Amino acid sequence: MADPMRIRAQAAGDKVTVRVLMSHEMETGQRKDAAGKTVPAWFIQEVTAAHNGKPVLSAEWGPGVSKNPFLQFAVKGAKAGDKIAVTWKDNKGDTRTDEATVT
Image (tube, rainbow, N blue to C red; front, side, top):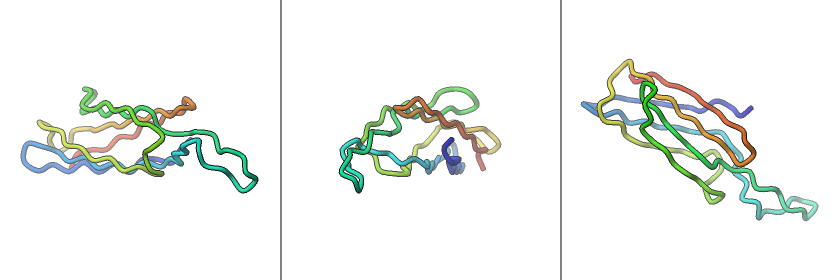
């Protein structure tokens, strides 16, 4: 299982800025290892976010996203104490969900 995501959700007025740092190798499938063999593609394909269980973000990614990707987005109508959950799924079927409380 992948390392936990680092999620920070900070309220400012009527919107919350969410910053997410995901731990993932994000291989493109085009790089070769020391023996000259192609390293298989392994990357995050889907990212979703929910505010108190209600979907607020859905994204499809590809192999062009960097290793350990960073994502930032804003949610209107959220307030301190609310929950923000972020989920990713990669092309091998692995998933990870982590949650943060808005401060």
